[in-house]
Image (cartoon, rainbow, N blue to C red; front, side, top):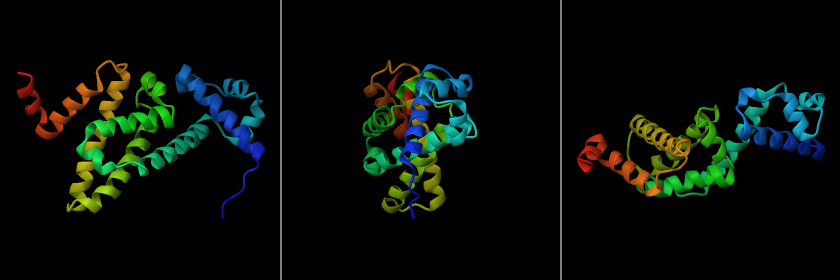
Length: 193
């Protein structure tokens, strides 16, 4: 049974979330204070504490909402295509992170060093496991290793692209990742020697 939330509570929590995420774009998490969140949300500190025990509980709630949105977007995409077409994967992930979650500026500033990265990685791995276990005849351990390696690598490259200010073209990133994925570092050395 779904618990009905008072619209006033929903509105207050939305204001707190919006204030927090706007502050996160401006400064590092450990520099954000509850007073700043309360002022930006146009509430007092007591109201903040009526809903959260502290910033870390707010962070968890915001991250969990983002992961829910990320999972919804992944479920609407063709992940089996992403395995064969790295360009599709990077476009998909960048689209989800920038358009649907509005996190691109956050990752450009802080990278994936936040506690959100493991949650995004886990969500991607779970989705891949669900899709690929039906399409590939691999034992579960081999599939887990392959997904771990592939997903972590793809997100790490996307993180690097964000941190570098997206200076390289997506085509260059995808070509490089494609060579490494299919031929390893040896293939990259042969291509550039």
